[in-house]
Image (tube, rainbow, N blue to C red; front, side, top):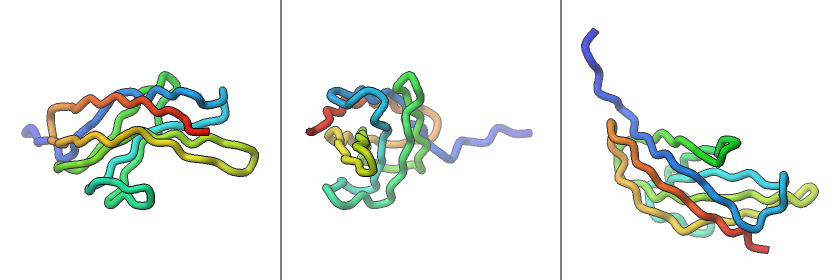
Length: 106
């Protein structure tokens, strides 16, 4: 079988969380095909972190705006905090590394 060029790009890294109550949050990364706003994320793709805080996000090739997020849970409701977005040029083959720090807003 001949080698087949990858068709997806990978972004890996970590999401560090500051200010979230222990065991009452979930974190990850979100990628958008255009600059995200407070209410929209075109082409949204998400990946949640593993127990060690790392993630792997597979994307189609192109320009993406990626940012970390944290959902903090309070009873039956939740709030979301995000990091600033970082522009990523996703290309098949090389893996892009992006680390995020999300401070939970109270």
